[in-house]
Image (tube, rainbow, N blue to C red):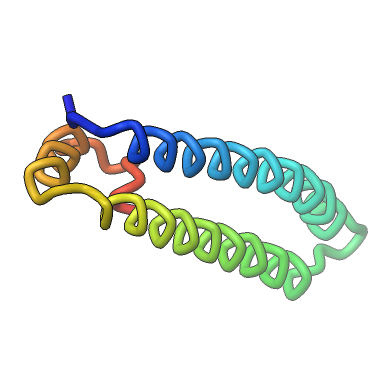
Length: 102
């Protein structure tokens, strides 16, 4: 659909593998954070400040991860022709979770 050449395909695959690896690490961080959040919420007296800090930490990690992913994707897209980029936008249309909208 995009008409990518061999180098573009390789670059896109490298991007997707790196993103998959990053998401796996993020999932592990999320589990650790969930345990810490559970401890803060279930303590005898709920630790509101700790729960807010934990939530903000995860929001910041998610935002940084998404920013990095978008930058990496933009670098791959930079190698594409205008027509290829337009086709990619068409593929992403109506998909708010698309990498183009991170």
